[in-house]
Image (tube, rainbow, N blue to C red; front, side):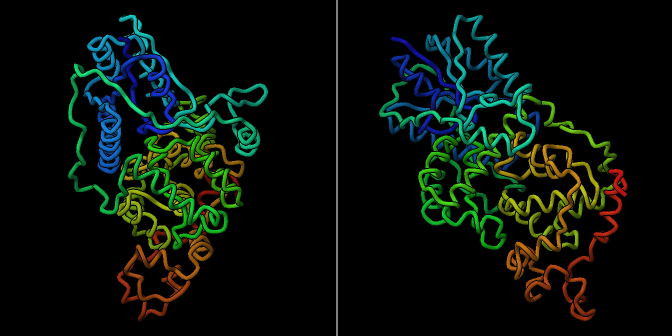
Length: 457
């Protein structure tokens, strides 16, 4: 009786799962395994929102495996140690897992390979599990990665995707392997009240419904702040509850302009993965240094606190920050606006903003979070690194009647129309009744400081 282990990481699903498919084809029995690594806790990544979503994902995965005759084995401890112990307990000769791109993923794979080789167990690492196109599958002449999105997208769009793999009909697992109960949702003060449910079942249901109702109009509506017309699939893609290969394929089958625009966003996700795979240090350091002398926590303490709490005096910025706390998610256009405001108007280090996002975002990961922050801050891959997004103009353009702002900033609920984006212009008697703060600073002053700092007087 041959046995294989499948180590689930950022691929918490059964549909289109290459490691599981390979394990089932190579062994009589398969142990589906998830390891709760204390290193993740020590690094501060298991924040309440993502811990709750992860708990949903693991519960759903376990339920689906039991429906097929198996179960999810959950262990706690260093990953390499626990995987080797499980392999030894069941006599496994192979361990299958998805490839990762972060420094943590690389270290995990190295330690796991060393431990397993010592026990004469083979490690099989599979690409195109957490991305549609594997990092490094397409590269420009003379470099190990693309540093600009558009040429990457041209090559990425021509790259053939692997065939989709069906959900297994059955998973036969040995009975002897010890495990824990999957974790339950945490009870924490920082848990966002409107957090979405996690898991493959919820993700597939959301994608199916949105593909029928929102995909065709995505191109025209994805920047509409009040319309909330984006897919909201990012948490499911982050945890691997949805296959990016399947999402790209299903979207392309629709053949609409909206589907094409949506696939472009999925390409951005792969683009960032191939950047970080080649430059893992970009998760903490500038991908391209501009000589910035950012303000830090001490120098800008009051401004940073106002930004975090959604009381900057700029309504669309405050709306985005309050949405983040309430939902563990933020509209993509709002993410761009609040990030630009912090880094270029307040001139605060992008890492401070990135850490705050990772504290609350249910889809927060080092790849997309850090590189999107650098793109906005002008230290990443943006070909226009000095661009500054004006929050007033952005609000008027993408929330023209102020519905998004009034939804999240109730102090401004009685301000009609586009006037909600500039409450400081209201008559004195009306403004006095709002109980809403004045702007932290004049936008012109912030722009002048940024240009001077960047040497663009």
